[in-house]
Image (cartoon, rainbow, N blue to C red; front, side, top):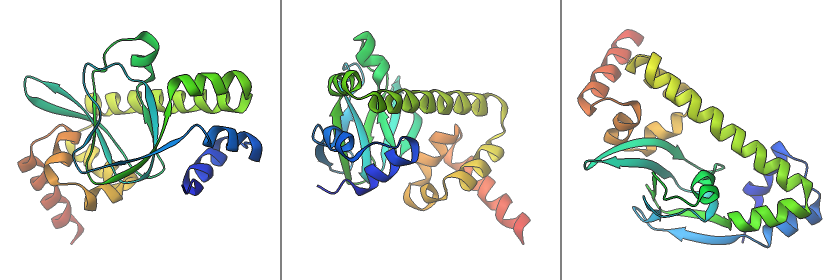
Length: 194
């Protein structure tokens, strides 16, 4: 089980001692998800967090048969629905593999236990929670105040990898527009670059 990427991402945030990282890593389980396989279903109480070693996971909400994409998680991203776990309520979001994924899985209970034993695990966990909260705020703000073209340009600037790895209809859903509108935006940007 190669935890190199995970260790690199954690060490960017917290300088774990080798023994502390080892204690954390022994609680991990490596999971392989097939394309379109569900990690967590809507209505189910979340019990685990994950770290993407390889692949893309899509977080979306279903309403009246329509999908509303919240986020895409790619290599090096941490994800999980701690609010569902903490409050013991069903998750509102589905987490599903967009492509084959390799994910490190750890239970929220294990994180809590490790947080009591290792202060850096607690700091790390709190930091991840704050980062997620900021991302949710920024996304909601963007959907309320930015034009679709501004959201597209931001996505292109911040996450260019998604442009080549995701189908256009996923990108359009994420941006809150139709695939036709996305095509028009792309065409307009292409023409303006010439």
